[in-house]
Length: 272
Image (cartoon, rainbow, N blue to C red):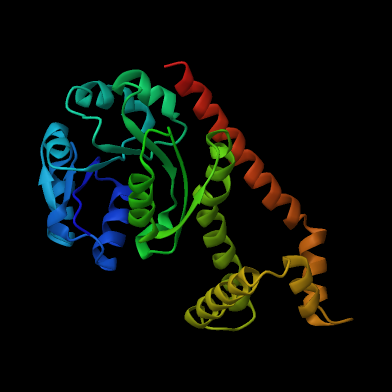
């Protein structure tokens, strides 16, 4: 794809996208431009992925068609003020800042700018991410399709109303950590039962991957669960133990608390 991509901020999520783009070969490294306040971080990204690095955000703007704002919400306002005179209506801005609404970006950059807001997760690094997307309807259909094509190189793109982004953050943004914890716990159970840790982790990982693929075929998780559960068998014994210890409630509560915290962050940003 003959398009120049910029990243203002070279942190973990920026690297996840850079890795996805470079490994997917959709965007060549010489078409990617990155700025960051940490020179050591910039050198790492250049040496690892072969991207162009810049010491100023304005330099990234002048070399990019699509610019990812991959900075923390608390510094977003100062970054937007810095770059506002350099952004043109022809460029596309993609904000990844959690809790930072499009209208706050427009307040500084202007409502004539093409702004996309996304909520990705760390899985974009291996091109298996899920990316929620919304926008301010300034993009032409062709431009929106280009953005979706770029993002799709790193995972599946789902258009979601902006008012639902806190829920998206709780499930797909925080979700990988909950799954990693689950993998670790199930593997610990395997080790306790006598399996070598490496074998236990492999068994758990492949079981989760396969289970997710079965859900994607369209059958409800409850139906699939029942197909595995035989009368007086091992699965129902394990499920009974999980229910007895409130595992289902714990997962629901985890999403609820992550959602609550995301809303708190959003409300704090609204007051900035």
